[in-house]
Length: 324
View 1 (cartoon, helix red, strand yellow):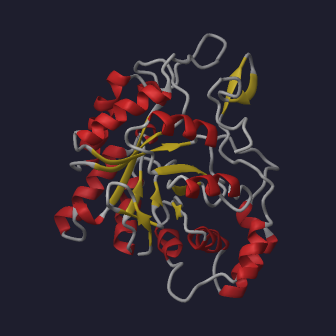
View 2 (tube, one colour; view 1 turned 60 degrees about the horizontal axis):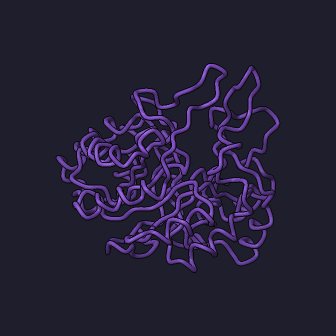
């Protein structure tokens, strides 16, 4: 499989991975097994997805069968918002490693720049429905992540859902520089400025929700449906490929890692079939770049006083209020 380049820790990150967000219990293990059998070697996980133990059982099965070895895989997990306190980082890393039944993580990301109050509730709320924010600063969280690298539990560390100013703030205090940024990116949100920023700062870019995240929990009727875009469908027909395959190939030709999610075995295999002779023309690439709206599929919403509002929009560390 094509590599997205070597990270600071000395391991290549594959350009194509399998996403596990929104994969239901009882489905995600089978999806990971199918993906590994199909050739995927990059698996994207997170504590908050609530399925790392099931993924771990699938990984152990493939290790025991001799299909892959641990060192063949690139496995990512993420630190949840209620675990931003320096004292909570190591236990969170250890839990993900234990649940995934692996000895180390190839990559660990701060999932969001906004901390929440620690405790058993992953989304602690006030009486009016608003979230309970902690005073933890992500730059302090970063220092605790660095200690996990020093301890051998993590090979590389990075950020997710951070903007360029927030990344710069981390870089200024970092002993170990961020290796990867993972954010939403698809033809309706092409992220050119942020990608350029990452290239200038030697940060590898990973695109999540590359197919527009049609099954996101807060989707509403009338919102854009990327895979039904007539121009995208037409490009796919020209190459004998699906709209999803076109979206994935577009990201790969940009040099980005891309992590489409599916629990459907046929689609998992289809999404991997984007190498070989399949290549988008320069005209195709420019056409797809022109789809940019920009529009975000992944703006989580919460209900406050009976009204649905973007989660965290008023917070000082909200990442989407800046230009990029």
